[in-house]
Amino acid sequence: MWFFHSQCTSKSRLVDKTVIITGANTGIGKETARDLYRRGARIILACRNIQKANDAIEDIKKNPPSKADREQFQGAPGELVVYQLDLSSLKSVKECAKKLLTKESAIHLLINNAGVMMCPQETTEDGFELQLQTNYIGHFLLTLLLLPKMQSSGPGCRIINVSSFLHLFGAIHNDLNLKESYGPMKAYIQSKLANILFTKELARRLKEANIDEINVYSLHPGVITTEIGRHYNTTIFPGASTIFQIFLQPFLKNPEQGAQTTIYCSVDEKAADETGLYYKECGVATPQWRAQDDQIAKDLWDKTCRLLHLECNEDFANFLKTVSQIIK
Ligand SMILES: NC(=O)c1ccc[n+]([C@@H]2O[C@H](COP(=O)([O-])OP(=O)(O)OC[C@H]3O[C@@H](n4cnc5c(N)ncnc54)[C@H](OP(=O)(O)O)[C@@H]3O)[C@@H](O)[C@H]2O)c1
Image (cartoon, rainbow, N blue to C red; front, side, top):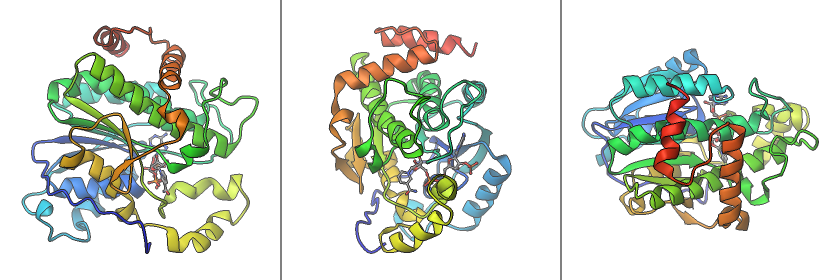
């Protein structure tokens, strides 16, 4: 990548901090784990494929980030552990959250990174469209379940939602599951817009409830060579993945470069007093108009609660208590 390649320059160390990264066995998630592990954090790789996650751990332990002599990487590295999480199953999300709440004494950073893009139409065991559930609904529920633990782990906790610039072309449809009008890209860009709206609405609710221990961020990481295009050959045309790689090569970041904005939102001091905003290239950016609309954000929140059978309650502290009941 020869232009637009910002670096997170923060020298923050994360000794005694616990970080959860969903989808950390490859791509941006794995590179984020590699960086934060060298800053001294206990990293929880929340992944659906345990073997792939263990392989990622081996790789992260063996290979430091490319600029390993930087101040933030000096000192002892942290720890790497795996938890099973399949975001396309609410049962799995609840089990993972329950285990995390029981076993972890604190959670300081939650990085909602896992994602799928442009898959063939598929309905999950919970009855949701696959991209909607993996990219948005699964993370929505996981976050709500972990919030009380994060609140007690503060101050300075952060939740990061990895979105995409492709949200620019997205809308939130009445039929969130796109049952009658499915398109692989339509579903992806809706889910990525939902990530930003969730960030905005969660930040608003936290502020209103005077929960100032937790800030929330959403971001576009860049366009990066990862496994995200694994469905292109099926849903675009055979060979699409290779053709995109060849033509887009000069504009693509490698995964380490692609992790920089996630790392920035996770550790940088400049972002410490910001919440509810959208970032790209290690700085605040402006998302499309729908992502800035308070009513769209609130409506999506309420609709998601209804889909999850969570009682909508404007008193956020009480709302979190009722959410916690579902895993008791
Ligand atoms: N790459 C880009 O150009 C780009 C651009 C904009 C935004 N993004 C966003 O960046 C994030 C990371 O993507 P990436 O590029 O690093 O893609 P990637 O290499 O395909 O990594 C995606 C990760 O998500 C995990 N995942 C998928 N479905 C899951 C599920 N049901 N439960 C748990 N984990 C699941 C994958 O696990 P498995 O290995 O088991 O499948 C993998 O670890 C995504 O949210 C994506 O939308 C990427």
